[in-house]
Length: 231
Image: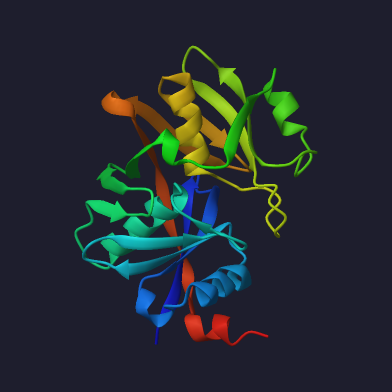
């Protein structure tokens, strides 16, 4: 029986935070795009990923309301799940492009390009307190990554992510692609504290590449049939 494996991505050092992710490692169990979208909607996570070819690293990513060509935390989470299955994972193949992935210590990393991050914008606020005081979501339309420096000299910042796309997700606990976009815009390494307790690290590389890393922890599993049969 196929399961939806669940992990939390970008967990803090104390084990808090982390954005919940569903990974269907056997993508053959749900081949139709419409059915995959419905599974993602019923799970209700910010994103769900289907693995179409584990050996080649081919993946397909969904929010509760749309399909994505690229995303950060689903790729980090999927890489971690595939490694837990015992497979060598060096690249994940998305519609946007091939994403290198590897492990450094307790962090799983991916490498991508800021231009692959579609539909998101960043906005700097004057203080951490101002970011913390934002309603979820703030007024306005379009995906917003709100941030402020905690310590600019060290590259430490506070961020919150608001999809504002009209589905059930008012705020993302942690968002790898938005952190990638911001890091590329700043042109420097950053250490992000996002959501209630998530931790993201990111750095720029030559040739227009940006790397994002974080901790991943397992969060149980759920039979896929239980999801598809839900009323």
